[in-house]
Amino acid sequence: MKKQYTFETRMEVRDYECDIEGIVNNANYLHYIEHTRHRFLKTTGLSFAEMHSRGIDAVVARMNLQFKIPLRCDDEFISCLNLHQEGIRYVFEQDIYRASDEQLCFRAKVELVALVNGRLAKCEEYDHAFAPFLQTNEKP
Image (cartoon, rainbow, N blue to C red):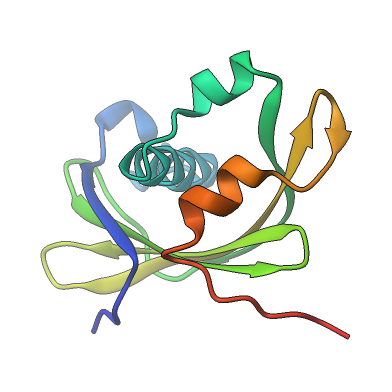
C-alpha cells in the first residue's frame, strides 16, 4: 500500500517502452522518475529549462535503483516522490506504483546537486522553491 508523498503524478506505459519480454525496459524507469521530478519542479514555480538558460543545472550525482515488479504495456502508474536535503545534495526518494492495484514496481533514491555556471554550488533558487518540502538531514 502506498505511503504519503510530497508529489504524485500519473502516467501510462507506451508500447515502444517495452522490450521483447513485454515488460518496460529498465532504462525507461529513469525517464519516468526524471519526468516526475520535472513536473514537481513546475509545481514549485521553477522550470528546469529556464533554470538551465540562466546557467543553473540540477544534475544527478548518484542513484540507487530497485526493480520490484514489472510494468507492462498500457499499465497506468503513479510516480511519487519525497524530498530531503543532505548538505548541498537534494535527495529524492521516488516510488512507482501500478495504479490498478497499487503494487510497488520500482523504487529509487536519486541524489542531485546544483551546478551554477558549471561549478558545484549551493543554489538559492532551489533552496527557496523546495523549502516547504525539505527536511534537512545533516550528516556528521
